Amino acid sequence: IAIYADPSDWIGKPVRLGEKVLAIADPSALELTIWIPVGDAIGMKAGAEILFFLDTDPLNPIRARLVRAAYEAEVTPNDALAYRAKAELVEGEPLPRIGLKGTAKVYGEEVSLFFYLMRRPIAALRRTIGY
Image (cartoon, rainbow, N blue to C red; front, side, top):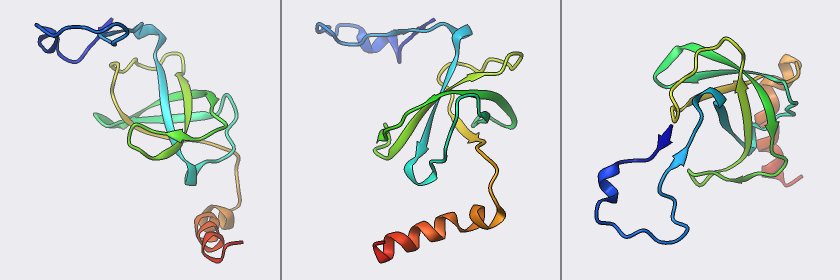
């Protein structure tokens, strides 16, 4: 599949060397890109279970598995600092249309209820007191 915004945008426009005109994609080799905010980063291992909720169909999540996650945070297209993770769909899941967006729920190791509820308040307190 050739991916581009609008073909009429290119009519009469000169093209410079190295300018991206379109992208070529294989719909059967679909991969999810997940941006995990620095404050929500957990220990992620390859093969971790992921549920992907499409914005267009939030009641029917798509199952996926984590392929890789970056060790270094980078600036996202929304100018936020996050870790980039890649996931592949579990076999048998319906293939969504290329370019759709949504929310991903990444499952990590089980933790105690106390840690689950108090992780963010403790991190905020630590930042406030500078320890």
